[in-house]
Image (cartoon, rainbow, N blue to C red; front, top):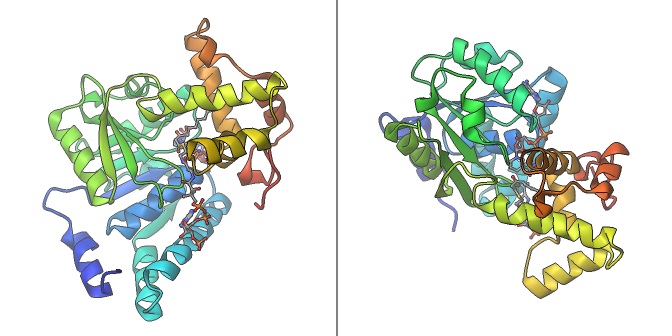
Length: 310
Ligand SMILES: CCCCCCCC(=O)CC(=O)SCCNC(=O)CCNC(=O)[C@H](O)C(C)(C)COP(=O)(O)OP(=O)(O)OC[C@H]1O[C@@H](n2cnc3c(N)ncnc32)[C@H](O)[C@@H]1OP(=O)(O)O
Ligand SMILES: NC(=O)C1=CN([C@@H]2O[C@H](COP(=O)(O)OP(=O)(O)OC[C@H]3O[C@@H](n4cnc5c(N)ncnc54)[C@H](O)[C@@H]3O)[C@@H](O)[C@H]2O)C=CC1
């Protein structure tokens, strides 16, 4: 049963957050993940600044957030549309857009990075943010596959650095992997865990190992599915049907690859292959490379292994 709106606001409004809790959050990257993280952080009473490279991208991200919020509101406030509207405007009121990353972190308690899966670009960003953000600001990356410690070296605040790995779609997926590196202080780690819980997520503690928990298992599984098709042993459709009806997965591996983005999958597997060239489970895939080269990046562009609505 949904909470009456006033109770919801009391529980989740910024003033309702615990003393010393993270309140002001900057999300860098307003793509698939950044928009989802921004939506849920704003929905749970945090004051959010979402950053991307230009206003066109930011406006698209905001439109996606509104679409997703409408779906949430339709369900949660089915019997009280007025309260639903009030919730929607409260959440959007918690969300600001910004193109200048340095300006965006001035008041941040926490910065979550969700930009392209590329070590050099992430390091460059964090190096600049380190100079712009207050000393107390905690930094976190939502990387799927890059070691957190390799990103953190770009800063002078490894003790205030960790990983927050969300799952797609962020509004629906309950899990949050919270990653610490050896330098992460207990205070930082506790704040990250508390923030995850304040966002309504179930947290698991992870070490900084390749793919943390979920992706260390999920990436080899998804790549094995692609290799099965490359060998001509099954079609994508049959693999998906088999894994949904035979193993109980909500999406088959090809549907999920389209959902995640083929470019992101390629960044992940290429990165691991470069690091572990002899590991057969991390070998690159000619089929995946071909789709990416053709611009078939998945649902976000309307076509990947399948054609989809954009
Ligand atoms: C090779 C390397 C690869 C590496 C990949 C690494 C990537 C990472 O680092 C980590 C990841 O995130 S991995 C991806 C993890 N995510 C999954 O596995 C998602 C699997 N799919 C699902 O759980 C459901 O299909 C799902 C929940 C998505 C949708 O549910 P359904 O299947 O039941 O379908 P719908 O009928 O569309 O949805 C049912 C209701 O759910 C709500 N909803 C869904 N999407 C939403 C969204 N984006 N925002 C808000 N609400 C949403 C909604 O209530 C919907 O009902 P309607 O609104 O009436 O349609
Ligand atoms: N797609 C997925 O299912 C998941 C992805 N991740 C990780 O999250 C991160 C983002 O992935 P997606 O959201 O899927 O990518 P995406 O391609 O949808 O979005 C990335 C966004 O970052 C922006 N961007 C790039 N460089 C920037 C910069 N220097 N400053 C500001 N904005 C910048 C881009 O314009 C784009 O809007 C990656 O590290 C990825 O590995 C983590 C969990 C799941």
